[in-house]
Length: 324
Image 1 (cartoon, rainbow, N blue to C red):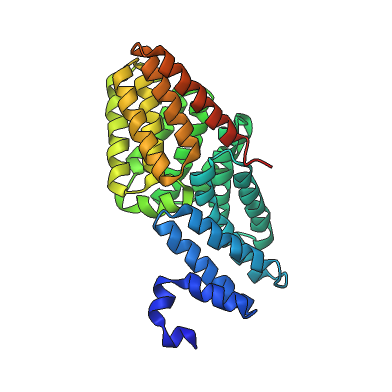
Image 2: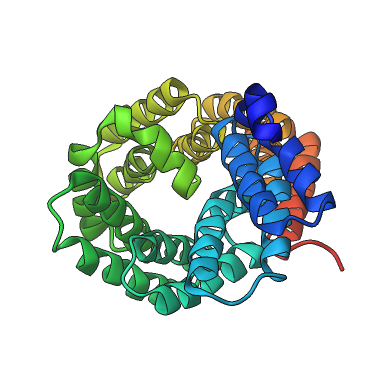
C-alpha cells in the first residue's frame, strides 16, 4: 500500500495520492484524498488550490451511488469550498450561491446536522452582498434562532456577526451595533483561525471591522477608529489574508467617512498590495476605487478619476461573475 510505504506523502501531499487513485479508477480513496488536499490548502490560505482539489472531489462524487454517506461527504466538501470561493471570487459570486444552496438541499437530505448553521451563514453572506437584504435578514434570524438553544459562545458569536452585518447594511445601526458588541464580547482569539477557514472571514474581525462603521454612523467617531484598529490588529495576528483584506476595506471605508484622504490612500495601498498578492479580485477593485478617491481629494484629479474608473470596472466585472 502506498500509504504504508510513504506515510510522509500521505501527510504532506495527499493530492499526489488523490491523483494516483483517480487514475487507477479507485474513486472512494481518491475522493478522500482530494478532500484532504483541499482542507490542507485552505489551512495555508491557498484558496485557488483548494478550489481545484475540492472541485475534483465533487466531480468524482457524481460517479458514486447516491447514499446517505455520499450526501454527507458532498456536504462536507461544499462547506469547505464556500470560504475559498468567497475569498477568490467575492461574496456575491454565483458560485457561492450555488455551493451554499446545494449544501442547504443536502442538509435537508442528511437531517439534523451542524453543517446547517454553516450553510445558512454562507447564504446570509451571499444575500446581503447581493443586496437581497430581506432574504439575508430572514436567514440571519434563522441562524440566531438556532443558537438560542446552545450555550457554546462560538455559534452565538457567528450568529451575531451575520445578523449584525445584515442590519448594518439595512441602515439599522443601533440594532447592528448591539449584535456586534455582543459578538465582540464573545470573541476568543484562539478560536478565530478555524472559524476564518470555515467562513472566509474571522467573525471577531468582522464584528470589529463592520462595527467600527456602525459606531461612526451612531456618532462615536473616536470609538469607531479604536474598533477599526482592533480589527486590523486581530487580522494581522491571525495571519489570515482574507480577514485582513476585509478589515482593511472597512478601515478604508471608515477613514473615507472621516474625509481623511491621506489615511485612505495609505490604507487603500495596503489593501491593493494584499489583494493583488493573494488574488482577491474584488478587493483589488475596491482598493483601486478608494485610491482614486484619495488622489482626487488631494488634488491629483486626473489620476484619481482614472483610478476610480479602473476600480469601478473591476468591481462590476467581479460582481457579475466570470465571463462566458
